[in-house]
Image (cartoon, rainbow, N blue to C red; front, side, top):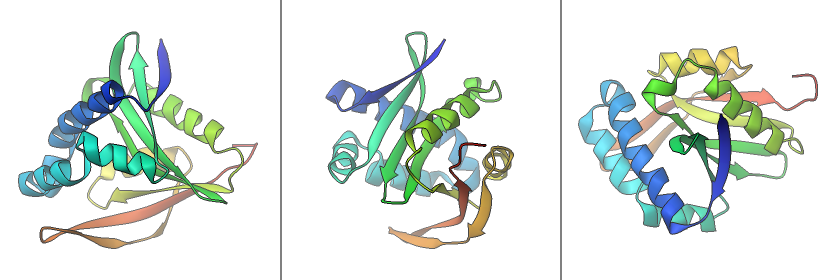
Length: 165
C-alpha cells in the first residue's frame, strides 16, 4: 500500500536527505557526474538546507510503501501555479505506477492552481518521457548557475490543472 506523509519533523527531513543522497548518486551520476552530484547534495540536500527551504514555503512529502520510505516530492505554491521542485523515487520502485500515484497526489494538492511546472535535466530522457506520458509539455529551456562552476541545464515542463485530466 502506497501512502503519503507530509513532514516537518527532524526525523522526517533526515529521511528525505538520506533518500536524496541515495537517489541522486544512483540516478544523476551518469547524467551530470560525481563532482556535480556531490556538490548538489552538499549544497541543497542537507537537513539544515531542507529546513530553510520549508521556511521559504516549500513542503516535503515522503512516499511510503508499507513502513518503508521509498521516495519524496517537494512543492512550492505560487498564486496561480505549483512548482514541483523535487520528485524522486528509489530505483527498485520505478516502473510500477507509483510515480503516477505521486503525480495524482500532487495534482490533488494543486487543484486551486492553473498549472503545475517543473524543471528536468535535458539529459534525463527517461524522466522527460515519463513526464510527457503524464501530460507535461516542454515550454522552456532554463540554464541556472548553482555555484561551484556548475549549471543546471534543464527543460521547463508544464501541465495545466483541470478537472478533465
